[in-house]
Image (tube, rainbow, N blue to C red):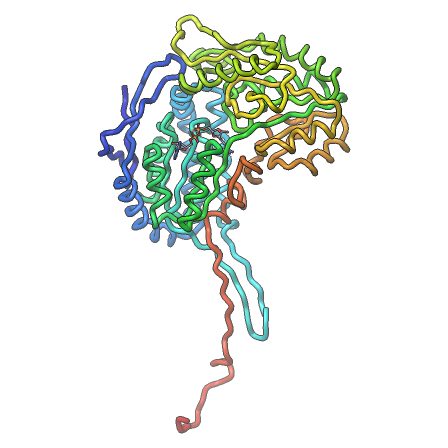
Length: 499
Ligand code: NAD
């Protein structure tokens, strides 16, 4: 048993609330640790200290701030295995997947080594007679990040790297399910040369989140999590005058055209549907084949692939395809939704319920499930299952498939599998979803683009990482300057009366 506290002013600080939340090992079902849940007073004190530390950090020149990211990247690489093992132990994902979680965050750190070029303003010489205009990007001050359980390294890194290199101080409130990796990142930031107080980790639940939303010093809130909480945080942060970008849940569809390579499409669906036990906001949870023949061909290929999937603990090494879901409550919810799918008339082709693994009977494992003949009226279609469940919705035409995706309330990611460039191009142009894959199932943009969903998958107007992140974490100030005729016209030698 271990206790995770807070990281304040460059050191671990014990929580004072007396409230703790259990940290499970999802593979065994055991409580392995506890995490402190902060009070409003603890949160406010952490913010006050960050506000004191921020001006000196903002005064460090951008290149030197970026060097902290260079060092951080080196340290993350040094500690990759330690980070990945801790991540797997608290989250449950496999070790290769945990390394990927760290890696995709590290790539944003790498892009932030070039932060000075992102922080340059604009300049217009002689915008009027003798008038020059220039704009500068200045940090906001103290900003906050509130992150979900499913990417405990990647998403905190997506937030902290641009926020800090832009000259802000940051309060990070990680998920209480797997808080250890963000605490390790805080320690690495200190080792990389970040001054104490500039990055504070305040662990907690709704009480500390509400304290963030109501704290007048905090200028901006970056949230990632489920849609109802994203919408709540967006509303409360905005009404308190803060900048907010809040990314929510998803229901990602993959359209499979009759001319697609069916084996490749089936491989992609199995990886994108069941990888990380389906606990990815970019997981594909709905397969949308066009034409009955395509649908039959797909099911025929999916079933043997799904039956071969190996589900197990991360300690079993690279041989496991996916691990347990995050909590017993998540397992129960997923299995309840599978039951509702059966009751509402979908065809359960592969049933992942009652999955049991010898030696891990108390673990939160859910076997892979595949539904066919799903319709938009069913709960398994309407809700984000966030588990290893793939639903097939049959359509008769490309237009019907496109309409299905467009009518869905979520708009995080989508993919189309086809051999026809014209169809792919039309899909990418018309679909109302933020990230699109063409013969590519999980189109998480690389770190020099930016990440953001549409519709109920994202609230706010700027994406995460890339150039958008620097817009989000800075304010623009524009100066219009005129200098009157001065000393260059020569000195005054004649004594003049004052008039
Ligand atoms: P969650 O919404 O339960 O929790 C996210 C954060 O909000 C956590 O830090 C949590 O402590 C806090 N929180 C939870 N309930 C709260 C409340 N009532 N008031 C205030 N704060 C609260 O999400 P989760 O279960 O940790 O993560 C899974 C969800 O995140 C899925 O819906 C997934 O699609 C989504 N997600 C979205 C993206 C994206 O970029 N769009 C990325 C990853 C995950």
